[in-house]
Amino acid sequence: MTATPAPGPTGVIHDIGYRHYDGPLLGRRQAFGALTGYSLRGVFGLGRPARAKIMPFMLAVIMLMPAALGIAIMALAKETFVGYTGYAVQMQVVLAIFVAAQSPYLVAPDLRFRVLPLYLSRPVTVRDYVGAKLAALITAMFLLLAIPLTVMYAGELLIDLPGAPRTSDYLASVTTALIHAVVLACIGLAIASFTPRRGLGVAAVIAFFLLTAATSTVVAAVLYELGSAGAGWALLINPFHMVDAVQVWLFGTPSSFADIPYPDGIGGPAAALGVIALIALSLAALTARYRKAASA
Amino acid sequence: MRTSTILATEGLSRRFPRVTALDRLTVTVGPGVTGLVGANGAGKSTLIKILLGLLEPSEGRAQVLGMDSGSQGAEIRRAVGYMPEHDCLPPDVSATDFVVHMARMSGLPRTAARERAADTLRHVGLYEERYRPIGGYSTGMKQRVKLAQALVHDPKVVFLDEPTNGLDPQGRDDMLGLIRRIGSEFGISVLVTSHLLGELERVCDHVIVIDGGRLLRSSAISEFTQATQSVTVEVEEGPEALAARLAELGETVTPQGRALAVLVRGPETYDAVRDAVCDLELSLIRLEQGRQRIEDVFRGSAADMTEPATAPGLAATTVRGDS
Image 1 (cartoon, rainbow over the protein chains, first blue to last red):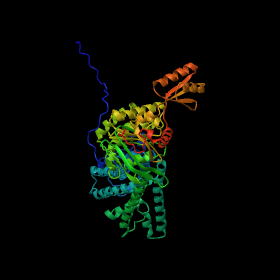
Image 2: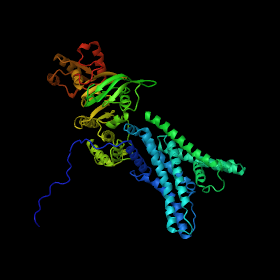
Image 3: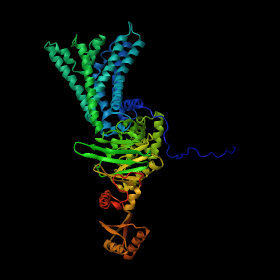
């Protein structure tokens, strides 16, 4: 072998001292986007320890199960079994658990560990902060609901059942998924933001959904037995049914609650107003909460 | 107003329903490291919040880098770094991820944020541990992360609120060394608060003392140290004898608990202490540079009011650059 010149030192770290940053500084909009992305990753536990990923991914898999079942039945029995428009209402327990488990995650640590002042000592404003957190949770809830619907629709197109595909149902359900996402995220974040303790936040959000669902079912059933027309209205106490009633009104889809019909006529617009009021109330609560938190 | 003014306040007051946090405070701060000293509740943190534009003053004005804190808060926050006094770190994120995120919140693009975060964490002395979740860090390491997030966007000025809080003596020395480097090597002006004047003496060019929201004193550090150069002597037994001997040698001695504070006139004072201890055959336990405490300043300023003619630059409105 011929002698090769000795290789010089490689991988030496030079201390080049402090360097100033002379690159561009982006505006508030980019910071908003970055915070939304960071929070969205946090909702699914990405970039966090493994145990933070268990809950969101488990729930996401459960959300996909009816879609998988629907595809299997379409492929084997050649008939449609799982519908698009009732997906959210049928999976309301899973959605409620997800929003209860993950919305405190978005707001509570920043309050508890007092990270908020670090955001506010930067160009980010309170409004940017709350807006980015909301955007992240809305996106997460939408993905949670829209992905199973889309998977099922893709399955339906591939299996190519006799007759036209249920495209209008699919589109109606995806649009309603967005409304569901906004309503759930607003409620969840508003309730969760009131306590810096995560466990308490989870309990409070789940309690809200349990209470509204139970009240709505019991009151509606009692009124229905009495033959009262108020039964349909009582269903709307449950936010999931309220959004479903909006879907029925907007797209003429069948009600997801077979036994008791939603109130007709004025019922649809009233449900829509209720949805808007619920969102507005949540946003007002969030604004008040963070005005106080920012001055602390 | 001088162009090299980093920040200035004019008759700044802030009243809360129960307390007056700031009372017509007028100060000017130039480049370099400036210490802001005051007891707890003296108004240090309130002043920083007003300077950041996060709190409205009840009256008066404040300017940072020539920008008004009331109307140009967003621009100020872009050019300034802030390290709060309290804990402010989420436990389940790594220092790297957290500092990158904070850099992006200051407007740095993704790649620049990564580079700056790595650089800054290295400068504050966090190496391999920066990939682990912050929850497992020691207090010293957490303080470094807090400092790194304040520096990551390369601000013109940093406000450090009690950066040595909760640190052991070694950690304190490291932190003070870092602050000195930020002011000199990094070329970033520093406003650092503390309730210990002694530790600020070592790193600051200029010190502002406030009490009850009012300015007590603002002067270059050299004036502080000149005024009270003293050496603390502690011997095992017989401090009285030592005091008598030193007084005999013409030194000014005041007992300080078990120790003696000897006013330093020059190098001959140290010789006198050494000779006196040897002659009396005492066991010397401690010989240390006297640390001026906040109370000494209060005492000093009270004395100055009685004889203003002899006080070097202690008038309440003394600003940087007059000396």
